[in-house]
Amino acid sequence: MTATDLDAYCAAGQDRFTGELVEFLRIPSISADPAHGADVRRSAEHVLAGALEAGFTRAEIIETAGNPSVYAERMVDPSLPTALIYGHHDVQPVDPLDEWHTAPFEPAIRGGDLFARGAADDKGQVWMHLKAVEALVRARGELPLNLKLIVEGEEESGSIYFEDLVAEHLDRLRADVLVVSDTAMVGRDRPSLTTGLRGLAALEVTVSGPGADLHSGRFGGAVANPIAALAEILAGLHDPVTNRVTVPHFYDDVRELTDQERTSFAAIPLGDGEFLAMAEGAPAAVGEAGFSTLERLGARPTLEFNGIWGGYAGPGSKTIIPATAAAKITCRLVAEQDPGRIAREVARAVTDAAPPGVSVEVDTSAGGRPVVTPVDHPAVQAMARAVTRVFGTAPLFLREGGSIPPVEIFSRRLGMPAVLAGFGLPDDRIHAPNEKFSLDMYARGIRTLAHAWTEIALALARPRSTV
Ligand SMILES: [Zn+2]
Image (cartoon, rainbow, N blue to C red; front, side):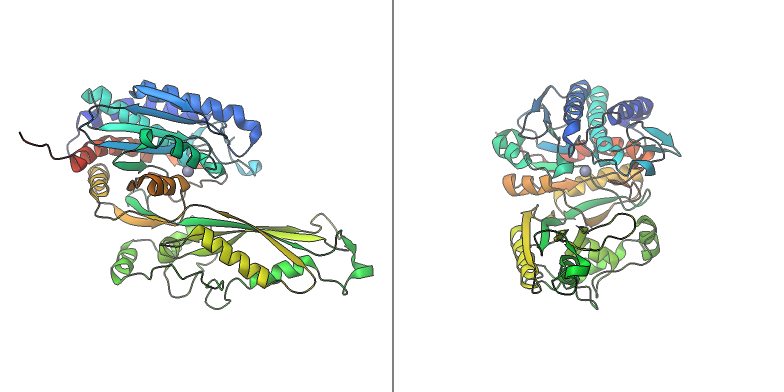
């Protein structure tokens, strides 16, 4: 493939692009921590300045009841297609801090990787989009389509106010296609695009016994222990042999995989050994019977325990029967599963399983619905051509195990098809200590997106009426 003006512009600018990303990553925009509120605002202002610098012609901070988002646009011609880019400028918390090899907000380059919280998720990928726009505007003089950009400030704390923002600005955000770079590829030389995301439902279960901790010598054996009750309830939520979730109606709205879907999952060259290496050395791949690892991740729902607490956990022993024990549960959802319905079904199963002598309380919160874009959608195929051009090989089409609630909000509220073109790698350790972004993927991402806008503009062009 011959290099073009765009490739030349990107190659010449790459060191500066990396320097700019390093500056962006220094801002500790942790949205979940109110102590970092001012940092999240500073990060929004940084994106706004970067968008204008890159060639967006209008940009503003959009306030929400939580942390601020940034909106920007460059409207070229109303007869051209319009795309909306979504990303987020907030990041996950950094604990446990002592596991980081270098400080999370002092970006460090080692072995071609840029280490910092937010490097891959999602600041690096947001900055990639700004630089792709810059390349088109500077090297070609204009964009081939109208572009809108929304960069959220609280994706990592659940996008709680993002739906209100979208509802308030529906017309401004409307576009022919949504493009999101907040996912990973299968591997450096195995490019992939994501065409499906799982949904999410969340619950917190609290089991209560006595009104206060009791002395286990004076009361033990004669009252129920909330930790034992909680453990029994949680253990009953999976079948010990098949690993299937036992909650009634849990699988009612899950579509069985077609032969074609099973064939395409099987075509993805990722063995369990390689998968386990990415899973930080987990000793074995374990999941629902009858499905491969990739099928479990992309096309099957789960029920996971995310945290459990109760009683005394300090040094030595403390002879108590604790007053309460609690756990956090989340379910990853697929196909037509409704988060509200699943949360209710799990809550009912948990309450029904309560043994005598304790009371159980369940708080539920529904996250996003699952999202799937057809592989043959013209915008997906256009992005695939840009990926092929830069990576030298055609992308695989994946369904990803994670959820991106804003994508679900755009899909439900505006009916926009989503193209999920992320340039992370599976070992980027997002949400964990030592998060990194490959500088090679950063560079390829910028070039791919610059080419993609041209391909997408052609693919979505409205036929001109002849007079
Ligand atoms: Zn993200």
